[in-house]
Amino acid sequence: AVDYLRIAALAALGAAAIPALDYNPLVIAVYALLQGTLFVGPWELGHQCNHGAFSSERWANDFLGAWLHTTLLMPYWSWQYSHAHHHKWPNHVYEGEGACPKVAGVGGRASAMDRLEAVLLEVGPEAWAVVHLLIVLVLGWWGYIFFGVSGAPAWGEKGSSLFFAPNGMFPADRVKRLEKHRLSLLLLSAWVACLAAAAWAWSPALVGALYVAPYLVCNVWLIVIVLLQHTREDLPHFGSGERYAPDARPFTLERGVFYGTVDRLGYGWLGSELHHEAGSYHVLHHLFPQIPFFKARSGTEALDRFLASRGCAHLRKVDETPIPQALWEVGLLQREVAYSPTTGDYRYLVAGRLVAEP
Image (cartoon, rainbow, N blue to C red; front, side, top):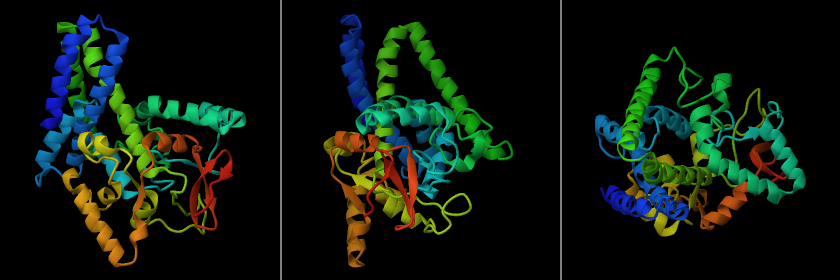
């Protein structure tokens, strides 16, 4: 309720000020930055519903979650399934869903993005980092939801689009899964129709300024949060078998969570008050996804005590790096991991070299 009160108050201010100031681009940009930051709150609450953290009743979680995500143009049940797969296989190089890197020596490197990366790395790491971040932050959300970019290779050539199905994630023979996917799109279509009606009744420019512009900012925030939860140059990825290193350490859920996840405390007040700890206490979330956000801090403190009592306090990774600096460090990483025989897992490449092992 508090999230929507903030959003409604800012929207009312924007509805009065933006037309009065003749749709000044700077005013719209400031409004979009503020409102888009607030949009992350309801999105995270929808994520909580996805995990059953809102209510003990599945229908209540789905009812509220479907509303929260649909009104932010996310197909609720489609993302519910893809996100469940992510929780099952965090930082796995074949089954991992979302921000899944390529593996050196596996598959081709002939795409336009591969060629661009090679050219920019020749120019220098900084050139690659700037372009890499721009592409990921501006286009990453669309690439993933529409085309399954950075989705799990396990889905095969048909991919894992959250919109275009049947595909690898939503195959034709999984009838119930496909039906939920189609219901998600039906609800989404109804919401788009509401937006179109609002644009017709008032003004397309006003709807674009009040809703679409903040929506784009919200998507950037979501990419930042998701990327930093599981991406750092010392966070390993796992995988073994015919396609990968046969002597690699086998994947376990515990390894994926503790070694492949980091709690980012650099969000500060914004992360705790407006984003409901979405990026701050992610280790606990992967272990106990039904714990609601308002218990994330106390739950993490209890987890720390438990780990310390067993001599494993080092397992929970914590990073207080300011978010802009953390993003820059991620930008320097290539889109590829290479097998490290010493550690038995896969480590990110930076400018063509293997990252220093711990």
